[in-house]
Amino acid sequence: MKSLSNVSLKDFNTFGVDVKAKQLISVTSEQELLRVLKDFYAEELFILGGGSNMLLTRDLDKTVLHINLTGIHILSETENEVLIEAGAGENWHQFVMWCVDRNFGGLENLSLIPGNVGTSPIQNIGAYGVELKDRFHSCEAIHIQTLEKKTFHLEDCEFGYRDSVFKGPLKDQYIITKVVFRLTKNHHSLITSYGAIKQELYSKGIKALGIREISDAVISIRQSKLPDPRKLGNSGSFFKNPIISEEKFKKLQKNYPDVPHYPLANGDFKVPGGWLIEKAGLKGFRKGDAGVHEKQALVLVNYGRASGQEILSLAKMIQKKVKEKFAITLQPEVNIF
Ligand code: EPU
Image 1 (cartoon, rainbow, N blue to C red):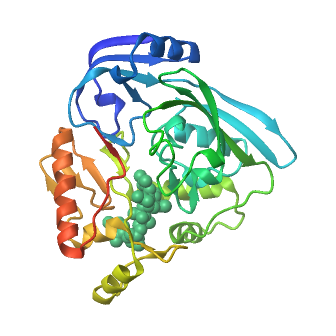
Image 2 (spheres, protein in one colour):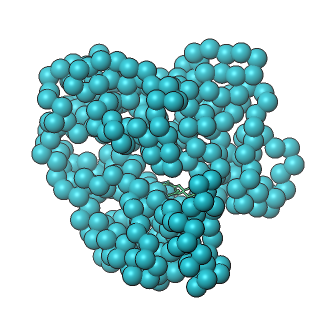
């Protein structure tokens, strides 16, 4: 267990925002985690995973508990299926690469997503036609107050678009310690329906398609338009893609016939937030060191020394402009503290 006082969290959040925490405790085992939870009242703790889905806007007068539980194990396997358990503190992309290297299929479309394994179920991460829930078997979590250990199966998690029970009714109640994934060994179901993947595979002339090729294609696509947090601070998509009623969508389409859209099963439409922000004239906009990414307007970036407050002001300005132009409210995807 490591403990530091009055420490900068700059290296612990992918936005690279420089705020301070009263104390930072990093735990590397479940025993250490339980010990810290026993010693502290829940309200004194701020739980930190990979720091990839948060915007910190002020110093934290709290103890930050960094979940650094690692380890990857095969739990069981059949002829075509394997259950793999990964510690919450495992880096997501490195875990995906571990699976791809062993030809375990299912997570390749989720290559290069920043963050850790433990936070992946909280917002049901997704990209290029796959969501975490499609490969999720279960996760183990510890209740912050009662210290009770609980296993959550797929049906317990209430997964939705960038949403789960851990963001809703059980928010801030549990710490996820490990996640189990159900992956394939031979007969992989390769998801290449997403247009950008098709184009990438086509332009590379890929004929023999496997999970490695898909992972490589996803990595190329992401690298071509999403900024690498190690070089340019960001938190992936800052906003969710808004979901609007059919009536509202038809009106929008009348004015903007080229609006990209995805019809949903309930009759609503999902519209890309990046497109709305771009049409509002804000793609590439920059104020100080806070900016709208030049290649993907849904992503906000920190060019160096932007404060969390500056990034938040930019986000609010974007919401206002998009609302004025389209009467659509963008909801942040990242958690703001
Ligand atoms: N678009 C624009 N301008 C932009 C950005 C996008 O016109 O500046 C248009 C694109 O041309 C395209 C559409 O919007 O027609 C969708 O764009 P893209 O394929 O880049 O995906 P997205 O909807 O912006 C979502 C996820 C991403 C995920 C990609 C690929 C959300 C909030 N974001 O973005 O996830 O990688 O699809 O599946 O659902 C993340 O959550 O952090 C994230 C990066």
